[in-house]
Length: 165
Image (cartoon, rainbow, N blue to C red; front, side):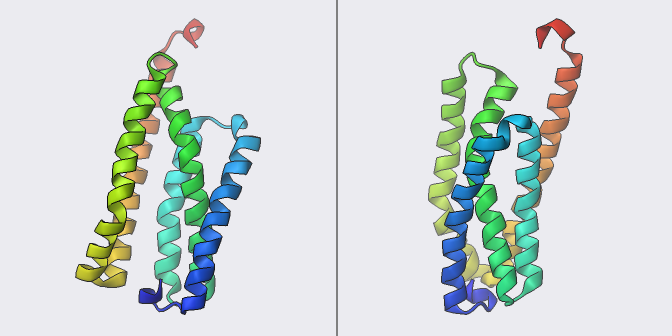
């Protein structure tokens, strides 16, 4: 964040708000999430990730942009951990749930482990704003993929016989 012009104290505050937002979103999801289909939650999370990057990029060094980014990104990251399991269950059912969720978790864990190294490399090669644009591009690609998944699942559900649900 300091590479985007934010003061060190604001960057530290944003890091703290990220964690708080992550936990708060999980509490809200556990409390109220059963009211929403996992696919809708997935689309919402997928929409908010690029929104967070846009706010950070367009807000420049304004502290409110960094704070808004951290809170939205943190909340989405927290929701993603819950939505991940709910989506696997919603899309594939209970049969083999543990194995299927395990595959998703391993893939996500590997990407999470590689992310700091990849991000450092992008910042070194592209600069902070270039890395931010790359993250925005990846977030938009994830949003498109989630939209396609949503459309596919909606078609599959509408094709099911009424008594199969």
